[in-house]
Length: 46
Image 1 (cartoon, one colour):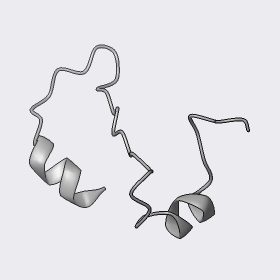
Image 2 (spheres, helix red, strand yellow):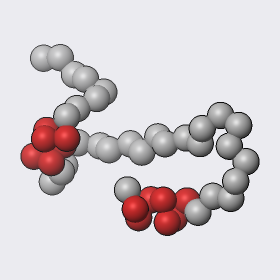
Image 3 (tube, one colour):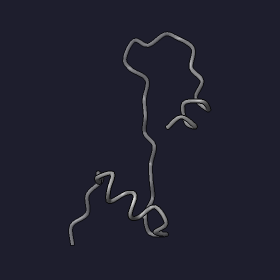
């Protein structure tokens, strides 16, 4: 069995309730970004 770190949106939607699936949010700010950051609002917005 092969495992991939990246999946399609369809696969993710089908497996959101799977207890074996872990979702990692690894968003980063663009290089050189200097503005204020509302991380909670960004998280809620998706």
